[in-house]
Length: 229
Image (cartoon, rainbow, N blue to C red):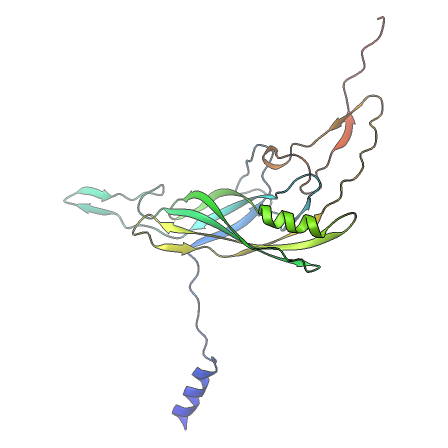
């Protein structure tokens, strides 16, 4: 009877199998500043907002780790593959950013694969990459579905794929899920009063208004010239 029970358990998928941890891992999501810069130690963000009336894309900084390392090789004391944490045969070359979408309310948003070029050093946990989480097709679908005060919460799943320098072995990073509250209605900017001037925020990477609540506003302007002074 025991062999039958074991066979039944296998046919029902009751035996647990552990999956290996991805060698390339996305560790953290951070908003880049207006110069597209961010540091590994900066405070991360778990979700954001996007107003399609001002922009099509959502820019996000990622901290990426690689656990892949190479073994130093030398022949008669001559290093063929020296030990290094920059470049070498264990370097990972990212070639694709895979994006998929789910939303509340349910909107049909096409998944996408975006060509992406980046190098990830071996045995490193401080690689910094900036991505756009909105493909042109995704922005078009959301803009068609949203107008006025309508909004949607979009959950974006992102993943890197590529190859290692040594042997061209392929890799897939872990997937991350990032939530974006999306709108498509431009708020009316009041007429700036005397002594004020309209200001458009620089936005992440100098991309302008529309992301994470950064919208045009009235700010104190230069003093008016004195007439006849």
